[in-house]
Image (cartoon, rainbow, N blue to C red):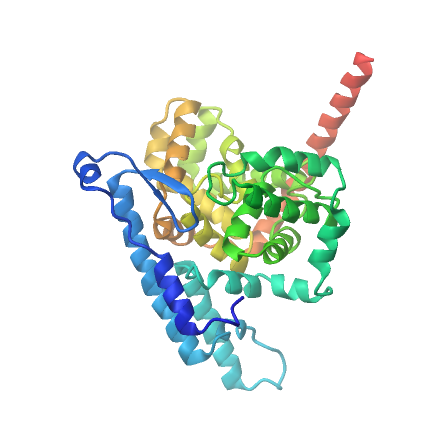
Length: 395
């Protein structure tokens, strides 16, 4: 896909993708709601201020693109792959320093955003998807899709039910061709991992992966590395035990990082999982504008699942004053939904996520998960027992 294009071709393609939005004079004067398509074909609604924010963001993206191209020119096309510091004397101190410098540079660059045209190959390399794909025959995906074609399972039935509901109105996803491509990716993965099979939420994640990666096979491997290496185990299994654990961990983190918000929401008897479960299962793809979502995914694929907690906490933190003034649950939900739907500037979100929320290590999150897991499993077991007893009574 990339081998046939020169860097100049890619640069021109990249510049053409990041278009400037120009609302009509009438819309500017009246400050009316305007509709436009974002870089990935989604229809976005906002006022002229939102358009101005998006244009500022796209100018930053163009500037970031120039930084990436300059680094490719000076360090080489795949410089970002040379960020691992090896062990032992075989590696000279100068090479170790070079790898360390690359790693620091790369982390900063990724947090500022990967240019859209470079995103597919950088995600594929840095996430581990390329390595995962290399462990199986080249024909793996094609063989798998052919082997499962025509087979009907509970997973395939649910997938068929969800296809028309996945980003309806999108100019490609909501077409027979788009549905077919998304179905093949989801069905193939449901057979690759029967423990996960298919869970609602994965349709949105896989759909966005298709739009970014361009090919079904690359989208499939990105989905595989996401579920098998990046996210916590059991997030998408039948009982969603992993997701329940994540929600418990998030609630604890909210109390530590945003105590005023947590205390107020508890007084309102508001369960944050009413909102955040979708954020975690869909990785914000149903909540944030797509261009903001993909900036979040840039960091997730490099730094791991801990980023989901940073971003979720940041959304609450950004609206702390409004949330504390909310008098009932409906107001809280409205504030959070309005916030996420209009978060057109990913830099605002990520600045809060990493500068104001503070760092959280993967080890810290893992300890929290282990702490919450026994209680979650106990509750799920009790739920199953109650359901079974009700079935017996019905008979």
